[in-house]
Image (tube, rainbow over all chains, first blue to last red; front, side, top):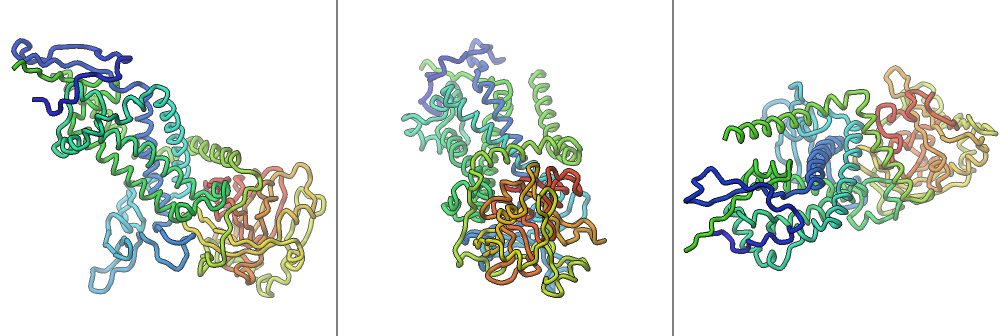
Length: 310
Length: 256
């Protein structure tokens, strides 16, 4: 039984070396002919740009949270922070109310609802163990301790790394047909969407030739991250720049103004975190070492499907 | 099988090493002498590209009266802790003199009345703080371009340095200062504001005058300006980075 019958032709991969090595598996080759071989799945430029993104996005998130800590509040309506309306999100510290244990509590207020987030948000232990008032805790920020100037240095350097890496990636993907061949969904992909959702929910992953190509949910997710989420987060970063505002005065009002842009920037960052969490989860459940090898050396082990002869 | 185990161990160790490097390494790099200088390439690139994407006179967004913030937040110094400042503030800044000197043909000492006689500009703009908040207010002030034309710059003048009255150290030293280049100094929206929201500029917001340089972040907008010095280089002033916050590691180009 094969999980999906959509496979067999190694479509569009004719110009790549499809079979790098063929070796018999350690199983009894005579009675059970399950052959496996290493398939060249990721080109060197894609691998390099993937790991560059890992470094850049990690540092951008952590330095970004340190920058956020300098004013741990987000606004939505209005053209500035101080419009007479409260922030939509606020992280802070206040004296504990009477009856509660003495001292301070860290709180997070979202749309007027307050949550006690002592220990993580608002009030947390610093690296040396002392309790300190800060938005996000030390272990998720770069640098560890409140240091806005240094966080900005990290953030803007790696923003350029991300931007240049992204532009090179898009040019490479268009030029090498990685985009049209591997990422653009074809008619068969669109038809298999329901099946792909069911497969993902059951943690069933393609084998054989189907494992050589991205599945439709994977394609759509990558396309959204590459062409929606990343451009949006960069644009919203630029919207916070007073100098870039002057390129075309008022353009940031299309997104609700500078403070709304800052909120969108923050939300987009956490959407990227959610993407990475799901991405890493899928990598783990569908073969961590195989995937890691293929993103390091390019070679992914394909176990051939058994074709029973009735 | 053993070769697979070896590979797995190698990968696990590699990942562990990368993780340790990422967390501990960033701290060490931040505190090193050389790495922040490497990171500074980001600021240089931002400044170059931002200038290339805009004309010298690209205008900051201006707003309607209704967009003004109910209260305009005072940040940094709210009242300069200096006897010299208290003395001029005591008689409503009647004895205030703005000194304009350095690389100019005609150094000047200007009273508030002199400043009010210079062609002015009124603008409702958004003040963007490096911390992430912003506030909108209406400003009226003398156009810096008109002032600089009247004192006639020498050809080697490249920067305007703003020396302020507020000490940043508790012992009364480390006076705040800032600097901008001539592109910003001659920008139409760059003014020495003496009014905020149709009233005399409050002390909390920089009385008697503060700089408005609208395409840059708040720390560039020096308050309590006492002296404008035209220089070729600011390397010899205080920490040499062109401003109080720049000397603490903030970017000189504060447009982003």
